[in-house]
Image (tube, rainbow, N blue to C red):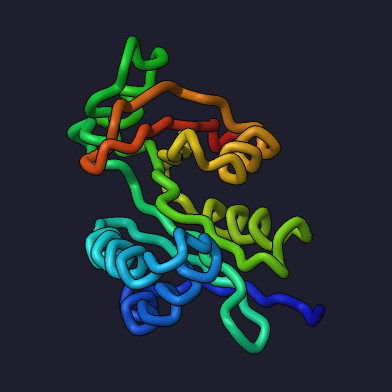
Amino acid sequence: MTEVFLRRLSRWQAEQQREAIADLYVEAYHGARGEEFHDRQDFLARFADDVQRTGFAMVIASEAELAGCAYGFPADRDGGLWEGFQGQLPEGVEELTASGQVFVVAELMVLPPHRRVGVGHRMMEQLLARLDGAELITAVLDPQNAAGLAVCRAWGWTRTGDLGPSADGAGREAWSRSVLP
């Protein structure tokens, strides 16, 4: 395998690369056979919204072709991220959210040949390296996403709690970690 290079993309560059990023999404996640078009269209709709968020940040990994991508944005200060949270939010999370100190990792995807060699970890480090004022990073995962949950555990993230079902009825879990070591 050749060396994988990382680089940040501006919002404009990310929008210009949306088709390639959607192809990466389909290939990285290998959805149900025959659902590729639907999965791709759903991703493109989410991506179009995400890339417009204030503070959007993105890192890609590539050789000759795209090998991975990670992106996110600061959580809305209104606390919408925690809507449907079941139980009591951990102490301080509401305050961090209201003060703009929570960064949401919306996607981390790596093609299978580039997994388990540090590409995802390197992308996350670069994505989080320039966060301005964030003290907590969080991700929302489907509890059936065994690979995503394993990565969160391996990287020292903790399960924040259940967010209740998404619009399509799938379960959602929040996982978080402090930006500071």
